[in-house]
Length: 341
Image (cartoon, rainbow, N blue to C red; front, side, top):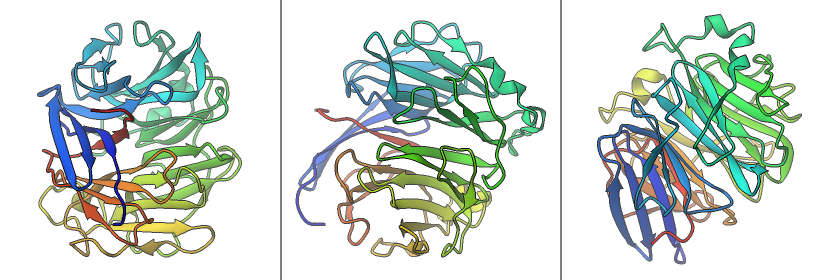
């Protein structure tokens, strides 16, 4: 990988949040929130040192200093298992970014005051499919796996239910539309793009789907993939036609943590089929690439976080790779922090 790349990352490890800084082949790690069961992390797009982390059974934490210190927020939430957090790039109230939190059992909450109070978006459970939502390892429940506020339209919001599908709101979560045909029910990641307002991308347990009309309709996008249990998803920040997905054969391989993931990382450019990316140590990949992260304003840059705690970076859209000289306890989610030191 040519050229230097300064990195500032927050990673949810499943137990803690790791602060990762790196440049010129060197990297440093500090573990924070140890024992919290951290599942997800989101950095404020308007204020990079502010971030939120969701934990398996300890609720939500907030940092105002890039992860040096954390404080619990969201005390009023009835559910303490927070599996998704998102901070809106388009919705600000009195200069503060709106924050969303998704829980198990499936509920969605919105905060307009930096996490002090939360509004339950309870009509999410009014969609016709809600009674059928079920997460296979815990079939008596389900959860909001991903939240995607639209980059440009503050009214538009998507929630990915595992297992239930992508739900759409066009009024900031006050009312919801059920899963559309062509999208996938076992939703893992949902993304929108700042340069393509109609695009919505989904990676799911049955494959990959795309909407070109802001979630009104969907179609599958699997041509070129030989594995269809998709987990990680990232889209280039500049080019909405350049995107990446990680996938394997099924949930047993993806979550086995036994070094037998049999996974692949794919790249798609425009209308061309998906192509598997080479140049990594293992082919197929022995550990699952859980977290894919493109970097703001750096076209072609991608960070891949594996379930065994390894981090790989490319600056040329996957043509060549560099391994960060760190190993985390595990990586479930990644978010970029500028100015982290």
